[in-house]
Image (cartoon, rainbow, N blue to C red):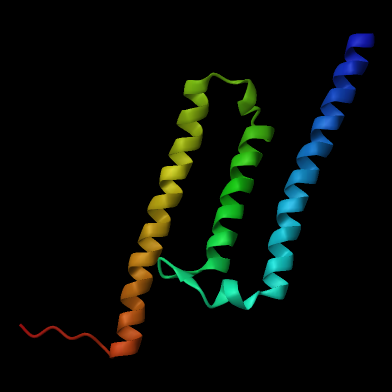
Length: 119
């Protein structure tokens, strides 16, 4: 009986820890979204503002932490953890690359006019 009570207290503490970390990351995102510091908005890195990169990175960190905590990945073998996490990381990198490539094309179309092909 004492073991169950101790395990329950540990689980409750873990839930509040996860809640605190995810809340902190979300609060940082919301504050940055409201304030929009000029040095983050008007400085670009790889065709995106630094603020957008911060949002992307914080979202990926939150997704990783949610997977780690709620899917109990910390208790799984290293191979399974790598399979789950790296699959998501590669998928996200691929999607970002597609968005940047297609976004660059759309920007070229809007800035240079319609692209026509002469056959």
